[in-house]
Length: 181
Image: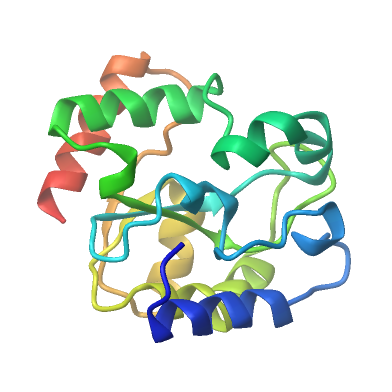
């Protein structure tokens, strides 16, 4: 993984951050040299930055340990299938971008509502240190709300898992935002 001093500081901050009611990556055996495991494949510190709500929940981590250990993400989820379409549209690979969540902990259920206070506390403690001068693309309302509350200049777009649109339509919107960043 990257060994930039700023990135190493963000990893240190993630390791130090906890919040009642949530699991840490270390609690689930995923304390690696990254802020989020998805950066195993999408951790380019100079590449365009996509920020969404969270990485995964604790039960999904437990159920998919083998795949996550190899790639840091679940390729067959709607989120990642749309991201792959986005990357094809803009001519980038996962290795050329940086993906991170605003919330660096694991919830206890899939698609759980994470209060703004918890998301903002995580971003203040960890996420803001990942920006490194980049203008992020906020994928979804949860990420955009945190970036607005933190005064971070960003571009807003839909979440890759947003319902009501086809994967192609979602990918087109996100690709447009990524190109604008």
